[in-house]
Image (cartoon, rainbow, N blue to C red; front, side):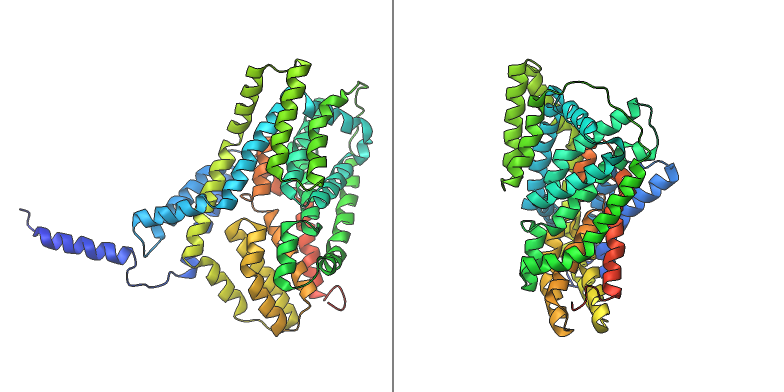
Amino acid sequence: MGIIPDKYISELFSAVKSRWEGTEGKPMNGWIALSPLFVFLGVYLVTSLVAKDFYKIPISAAFLIAAIYAVLICRGRSLEQRIAVFSKGAGNKNVLLMIWIFVLAGAFASTAKAIGAIEASVNLALQLLPSNFLYAGLFLAACFISMSIGTSVGTIVALVPVAAGISTELADAGMSGALFSTPFISAIIVGGAFFGDNLSFISDTTIAATRTQGCSMRDKFKANISIVGPVAIVVTGVYLLVGSSINYTPAAESVNLILLVPYLLVIVLSLCGMNVTAVLTIGLIINAMIGLIGGSLSWTSYLESIGSGISGMGDLIIVTMLAGGILELIKVNGGLDFIISGMTRRINGKRGAEFSIAGLVSLANICTANNTIAIISVGNIAKDITEKFGLDPRKTASILDTFSCIIQGLIPYGAQMLMAAGLAGIPALSITGYLYYPFIMGVFAVLAILLRFPRGR
């Protein structure tokens, strides 16, 4: 027997355990609930700045540290219960859907590269587009495709590998520097992809925004295009100006048009409204047929390409699951409710009301990493604010969609950024600094609130 009786040690342990697990039922402080996000940003950004290299720090490592911290600070639950909450978020159906898309996209991109589809697409793009119109052409193509298919992810899957290939070709031609780099050209595609995602009639963000506010898609489109239309024109002008420095004449060589079928098929099937997982699966089959019949692939090399494509997405899959778990813990600990109550406490006037809606959906997007879920999470509150302050539901729907897309296009752990980074083989944060469209859209969206534009809304 020790100096302190065992029963007292047991009682002391139970008391500490009870206090740590929060059995008193006290709600967690809102800032503490949100602190895992600050831990992630602190570890990733501060370490990268100290190391002077954003390419050196794996985003998955920063998320793992934040995930451990999020589990440790969770109160009112045993360790097993906290892990269960984390696992629920990591295994959320939306998270798993993104993982399946990552797996299929990685396999599709790898097999397309193996049969020469990416090289053929790059050569055709360089031959068809004048060198000074190359960047603007890529941006407008991304805008058109994303608006037609209603998904930024599908657009990124189709065009980012081509963009990465173009940057390689330009580098081989002796053009170096940030404006010819893979992150810069990938950012062109990501920006254009969000243009269509924000405006498309079949986009899930448009559907969520209009349904929560009770307005028609056509009316929301009119309010939205008056804000983002000028942004697209400005960004196209910027890319024309930047592209004027490209001095590249591709060698005249024939392009095997059969090799273009996989990417054209992805675009056409997406335009027809087919689910992205089905589209990518069909693309995989087409890649196999072209490779096996044409002799560029054997069955073994085809399977090796699939495996290497999936492996290349491994880091993104881990990050997606870790982010899902962390965000679920933030949600159950009251972080999202804390944001909502804080943002709606001191609303004053119509401008204040619109800014509060913009702030709500932006912060909700940061906490969910999904613009559709963010809109749904705050949609009813936004509707109450709209009715209370006499706002136009069309403008509110536009604000919800626009600001959620701005944030989704900038956070390095959003599905679109992770997908683009994975397909291009670069860190997600390296793309952020070149995202002209989301940044300029943010400026125009803020001005639209300050200037009460468009008029009558």
